[in-house]
Structures are given as structure tokens and as C-alpha cells.
Length: 115
Length: 115
Image (cartoon, rainbow over all chains, first blue to last red):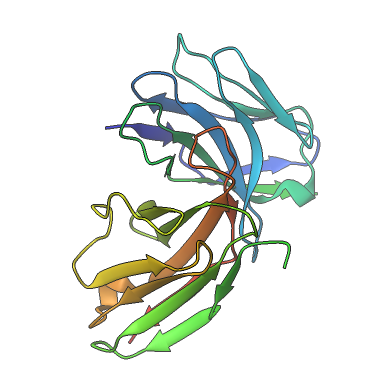
């Protein structure tokens, strides 16, 4: 079945450092891809999405590009802030006929940004 | 309210008791999803409703779990004869439709602890 693999954490960076969180997926067809973020003590929030190959999702300085050839959707940010400290989840929604539209999540990557 | 509302926010109960968790989706959202977040299993999909119908209940972990949705709005997830492995955060999400390109909006979850 469909699955998502993302890099294990925790990731600790200094403020203004460059961030990459790797995410790869296994799926039939053309799934929709998402990054969700969970800030401490808060619920899951959609960070960005891409619904077809070569689409780039972006929000709050974060970007991710849907790469069909490498089945990847890596999250990047050029300069992280302390306020970006959170757990980041890569996820997909399957494209096949039996899909219920549910999200399939990676395990999550905890990011800590130090001042 | 503007977002997905879940109640209770926390529930502590003894093993063997029944519990009922409630989700009030965003008004007008026809699709509703239940997920479970636990340390060992990450984020797992449980069940999906389109309107009042749940076309596939195979994601529910055992026959002790059931869910219903009435009036195309509020949903309840019921766990009978709770076990310690049921301890987790139960998340509800809603979206405008069941298609992958519609973002899912999450509630803050119900933290269930089985003693």
C-alpha cells in the first residue's frame, strides 16, 4: 500500500540556519502531497501542499517541490527561526479508485531551533 | 465555531470502561476523518465519513471501536471495553470534500488515557 518515509529526528539547528527535511513516498498514480506542522501544545496545521508533479507548495518561508521522478517532497527553509520549532509531518492522499481521501503520514520530524 | 471542535480534550478512564469521543466539524464540510496518534504507531487513519456514510470501516483497530455521524455534522467515536493500548490522542479532521486536493482541518484532539 501507499506509504511515506521521512527523516528521523530530532533535528537541532541554530537560528538562521538552512533547513531540509527529507520525505519520500510510495504510491500508485499521482497522489497529493502535504506537509503538516504541530507546534508545541497545538493541533496539526496544514503547512503547504502540492497536487501534481513539479508543483511547488510554499508558505511561511517553507517550500517543497513534488518530484515524481524521485518520489520525493522535501521540505526546505532558507533561514529558520526559534518559532519554527515544531514537529513536521509529511503526508499523502492516494489517487487510486479505492482511496477514501485519508492522509497517510510519515513518522514526523521534531525540529528544535536554538537562538 | 470557526474550526473543528473536539470534546473532551482529556479523558482518563479505567480499563474495561466505555468511552465516547465527540467531533464537531467545520460547518459545510461534508468529509470527516478520525485518526489516532500514539507514540508507537505515529498517526493512523481510523475511519472516513462522507455525509453520514462510512463506506469502509476496515481502518478501525478492533470491533470494540465504532463511529457514527448524524445530520452530516457531529460525529462520535465510541470505544467499548477500553484497553491500555487504546491510550492515544484521537484526532478529528474535516474537509470540503473527500478528494485529495481538499485540505483537511484538524481539531486539537482528545487525549485518552486508560489506567
